[in-house]
Length: 313
Image 1 (cartoon, one colour):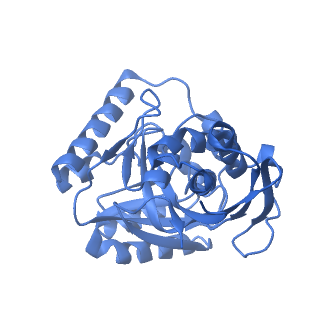
Image 2: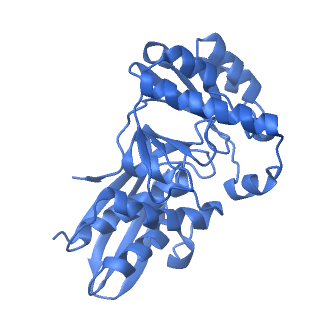
């Protein structure tokens, strides 16, 4: 049994346009790390939280009751830990309030790290509810569209009515995502509170049709259907105005041949789903459109089958 481990959990794209709170996609190349070590003292403690620059984070709390990573760790250790406790250190690789599942990645990395220190580790799927406990603290809602893909990888269907059961979906070959993160922030909990509570029957039917069509396209590998159904007629119209460069970046992606485009989670990050051989060029076009507004940004290109969280050697 290890005394100290470090876990990595990737960023994620929540909602994936058609599946508000129900679909999530892991994003390769960026994520959070949590180092955990066993201690003689009981309970969960936080040694430090480090920002993107490697310095102590100026905003994130080291109080175990107010940090997504420690809340997830505490829930797991309470149910399955033995004597002693766990000290964690959090290393942020995902910007806060970015629409890239930052809080979810911290919670997932903590759960995976603590699990590796248990005398009898749980299977990955059993960690979902513990990671969700941390994510709920940050986002204000009980949903898994960031936590599940960060934990398990790939494209995940995780409607609240089925939780903790989730379904890994097949992904069409040769399709990638290009994600653009502008240096803006959107508070997820606040964004959720601002959403309209009532929608027309036509809106509901349209969105359900797009969701069903998108999932059928993934199952059959029908790229044409994928492009026709990656649409959000309910949430995106309410949120896109908060991202100054949204329309310009969307236009650039579509001109570059993107199959579909939308916000990642509540934004401000945006993603385009595209043929893999066009993804890098589309990412560059999206960056150029964003910088045209004087907004700095960073892009990532990922396959739709990116791996989930793992223990680093």
